[in-house]
Length: 87
Image 1 (cartoon, rainbow, N blue to C red):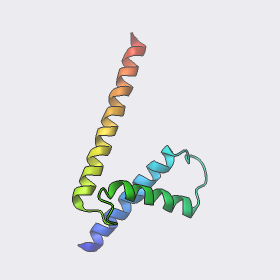
Image 2: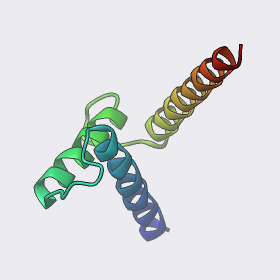
Image 3: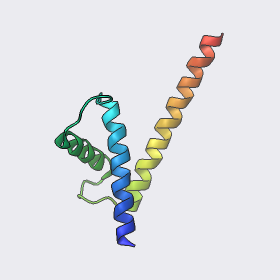
């Protein structure tokens, strides 16, 4: 069970790190291992709300809730911009 959780967390860090790298301007650019790890550490620090060096299930859920809200807000803004162009 612990291996499954660790694997899931590793996948989550890879996915969010890749998204973070894209947002940071690394899209289409070569990224070093050190840059990749630095990005993953920033994401870990963002998820670790109480800064104890551990990510609890509650912190993970809060992070993903925040990401979902951010995505929803961006989607709404995109739709409003699209509607304004039609007017």
